[in-house]
Length: 161
Image 1 (cartoon, rainbow, N blue to C red):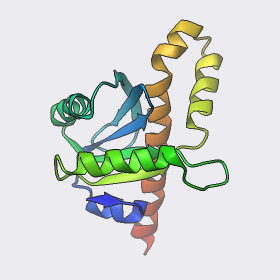
Image 2: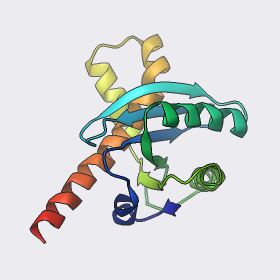
Image 3: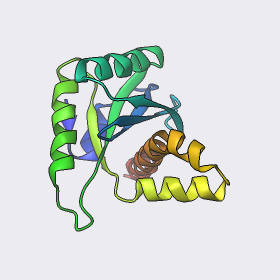
Image 4: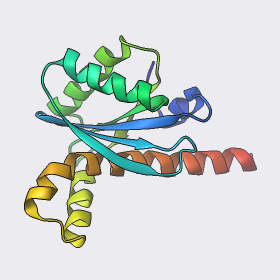
C-alpha cells in the first residue's frame, strides 16, 4: 500500500521492524536503513540502476535480509513544492514496487537532502572520489532520518493524546 500521508504510513507499520529509505536517481539508488526501534538511520549502499526487475531484486534482498517493515522514497519536489517529472518517476517506481510485496510505502520530501549530505561529507573532509561513491546513500539516510524524527513527534503526540 502506498501512503502520501506520513501519519497513515506510520499507522500501517508493523512493530519492531526496520525501515528502508531510498534516494532514487537516474543512475543510482541510495539505500539507508534504520534499526528496529526506529531511532537512527544509517547509510547502507548505493545500487547502480540497471532494469527495474534487477533493481527491485536487489532491494527485495536487502528488505528480506534486514526484516524491513516499510519503505520510504525520497520525493524530489521542485523548490516551490510542485511535482515535476522526477516526482512522477518516483511515484511510478513506488507503484511498480508495491506490486511485488505488501510493505507500506511512504514518501518524504527530499528537497536539500543531497545538499545536506554533501555538506556533512565536506565537513568530514571526505575526498571528492569518496563523496561521489557515498553521496546517494548518505542522502538516503538524511531522508530516512527526517521520517524517523517525524515519527518520534507523532508518537509523542499520541502518548499525550
